[in-house]
Length: 90
Image (cartoon, rainbow, N blue to C red; front, side):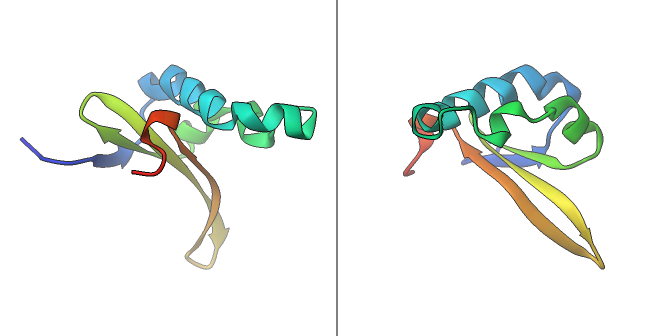
């Protein structure tokens, strides 16, 4: 058994939990922007299928995600970081 958070590639079965986490993490920006920010509209099923999403789990809870795009030449572009509100600041 591992102590502490676990990071792993996202799986197809994670889509709903990732969508909820992103909605919760970015919800406070909607009023400020007058529309949902891009990460709230992303196609996470496609991103997962493309191997671009990594998850961070604290116990049984999804604590956060990162979305990494292939920028070519072996480089990655950090496209999105979303952290569950209850885990922010930890």
